[in-house]
Length: 383
Image 1: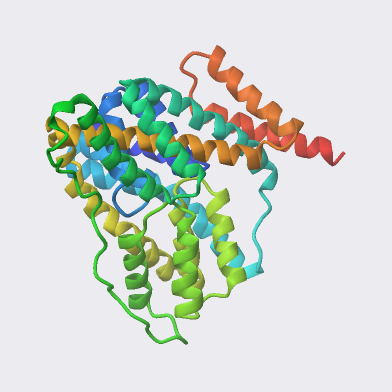
Image 2: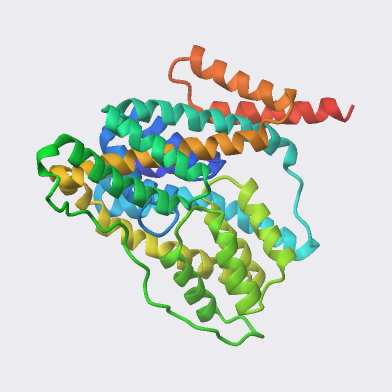
C-alpha cells in the first residue's frame, strides 16, 4: 500500500512537470526514479528504455508503467500509467472545452519559450549520466556514432534502433570472436507487431463512440516513432478517412498537446472531446493508451531474462546505446530550432549552471525556472 501511494504521488507530480516529449520525460524519470530514489539500477533503466523503444505506444508513458510494475507489480503498472497521463488529460480536457465554446485556445507561448531551452539541458544531462553506464566499451561507442549518423540522415528512429541493435550485436560478437566468422549469429526480432486492423472506414458523416474508440485503439496498437508521428496517424484517420476533423482543428489539437505537460497522446483527448464531448474524450484516451498497458505487462518480465543471454545482452547493450544516440540527436536538432537568440541562450546557460552548481537539483525547479525566465523576457520585450 505504501508503494502504491508513493507511485501515485511521484507520477502525478511528473505528469504536471514533464514538458518536451519522450526524451525529456525519460530524462526526468531517470533523475527522479534512478538517481534520487534508486528504485532500479541505471543498467536496468537503460534496458527498459531500449526495449520500450521497440514496441508500439507512447514511450514515456510505457516507461512510467515499467517503473510502476517493478515497484508494485501489475497494480503499480496500472497506477503509474494512469497517474502520469491524468494531469495532461485533465488539462487538455479543460482546453478542449474552452476551444469548443470560444473557438480558440489561450496563449502560453511566453512560458513555453522559457521551458523549451531548459528541457534541452535536462535531456543532455540525462544522456550524459546514462551514457556513463551504457558506453562500456569502444565497440559500443562505434555503435552509438553509427546510429547518430543514421539519425542525422533522417532515418526513422525505430529503424535506427533496430539497425543499431542488430548491426551492433553482429559487430560486437564478430569482433570479439574472430575465429567464428563463419557462424550465423541468431539475432532478436525486435518489437511487438501491430494488432490486425480493428476497424475500417465507418460512417463518414457522424462520429460514434464505438468507432472513435476502435480508431484510437488501432492507432495505439501501431504507433511507432514518437509523439509527432501521431500527427500523420490523426490526419490519415480523422481528416482524410473519416472526415471528422478539418486540418486547422487537427493543428489546434497538436498545439494543445505540445504546450500541456505529460505525454503527447493527450491530443487524443482533445480530438475526442471535439467529436463527442466528455464521453468522446474519455473513450478516445482509453483507446489510445490501452495497448500500451498490454505491451508493457508482457514485456516487463522478459527484459531481465534477455539480459542473462549473451547474444540478447549484446543486442540490448546496442539498443541502449542506440536509444541514447537518438536522444542526443533529437536534443541537438531541437536545440538548433529553440536556442535562436540571446534570451534562449541565457536560459540554456542558466539551466546548465543550475545542474553544475546545485547538487541533485530537482528537475521540476529547472522547468519552473525556465518558465519564469521566459515570461520575464516576454514582459521586458513588451514594456
